[in-house]
Length: 204
Image 1 (cartoon, rainbow, N blue to C red):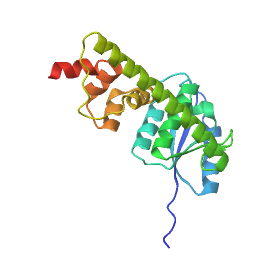
Image 2 (image 1 turned 90 degrees about the vertical axis):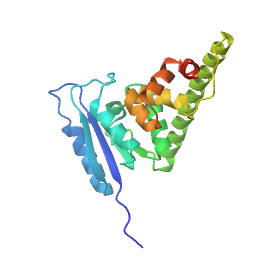
Image 3 (image 1 turned 60 degrees about the vertical axis):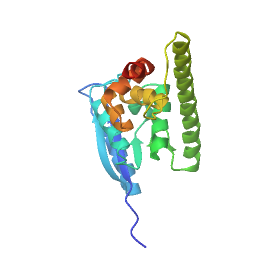
């Protein structure tokens, strides 16, 4: 039998001000990873509050996850990564889709364990519920457009519009979402603006 593949962990830390030091978080995360034999890459945002959507290192981490460069995301505490309950749900939905685990040292949550998997499934179910709600709003918009006399054709490229909207909320970039879904940035903008049907009508 071959040697077991090393687990690749994306370590995320954040401090709210430039003069704060993330070493406390990183020491514990490095030690936790060492005990488990994980190979780590660190992503650290400095001087950024948890409520801010612009977090360049978190964006870089998310891009790496989309390329499946890691097996697990490791944080010191939930509030170091997440800015809202909605963000938690969306991020866990992304991890489930990519089959990537999540560990929070302080909260003792590990989605690789039986109890952690339960939390993962609950949050994933909430994420699916949110996507269905978004999809229903999209369909309602199409029905309203049809009632106004606007013809809404089926898309030539099959794209989950609800997932596009959820991914954009998570990444905050049309270009990144377009790359993930293998389509043009213009198409992503059309979906977000709710005028994809109008665009297709004009293309005829």
